[in-house]
Amino acid sequence: MIRSELTEDFSPLRSQEYLDLFESLPILKKSYFNHPYFLFECLNAFSKIEPCFLFSVFDDDKLIGFDAFRKTKIKLRGININCLVPGGYKIAEYNMPVINPGFYNEFFQQLSIAAKKESIFYHNCSPFYTEFFKKEVKESFVYSISSNPILKNSKDEILKASLKKGISRDYKSLSKKTKVDIHHLKDNIQQKILNQFFELHIKRWDSNGIVSKFCQEVYKEVYHALCNLKIPEYGRIVLNYIKSEDELLAMHLGFMIGDSFLYQIPAFDIKQRSKSPGSVLLKAILDFMINEELAILDMGCGIEEYKFRYMNDVVNYFTIARFPNALYSKLFRIKL
Image (tube, rainbow, N blue to C red):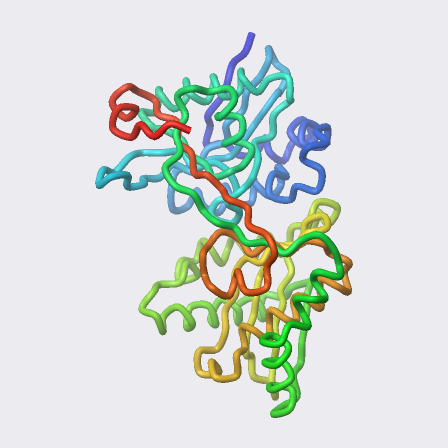
């Protein structure tokens, strides 16, 4: 008998049962964002500011699938809608639920039942969810598309990007004026340097009149926890930064996963803008990728011009929504 649980108790994610299911699925190989320990840290922190849930599906007493959610509101066509947002909690936009391949339909059926009970719908911009819904679920919808520029194919492509005129010129220009110190921390990211990153990010966005997410203590807590999370066989956080005469110019917090590098959260000293610190940092990251023999640079969702300047491909992520009742279905009917 298929049954499900939507619970605010996250402790099962630390159990061997959840870890065994995750590790038994080749499709999730090297998938840091779906590791139950990663999801536990996210849920544990974000539950302090909004309702968070662990959704689990069982065949009798055997676990066959799970995902993590936060309950929040989004605005569609001027209307506030309750929704469950699955995944890495604003850390990764493209995770996959952990499901035994033989039970995809059962998993999503149970999720629909849970959503109806809570008077909510759920949405996600994961290629996995989107592709599944296109093939299997007639009542799914797409309401936005995000462009995700990437640099892929080979070490030669990354080297070519690193040597391009603009990015190479900025690096050489800064190197002539001052000594440039470049650092890439993969392990033992100390609290002091992480706090400096938070401060730089807050100041950078404050200059644009935008409140950095790191003004909320919970986001600092999440990244402190993730920096101490030791699952290197699936991925790890990397802190890249450049200094000039002991002054921080730019920093970046990203993820190494398999042969890919996820460009996640950059920040730079706004007073040093004339030195092109962001461009210099990007070159440093490309050189780091060459040394680490990484094949893909994923710039994350967004249409910022600098993301496309050195990339050679684009992946589109479809934000899909599945509605729990006919009213929402009529209001937002945009078929895939």
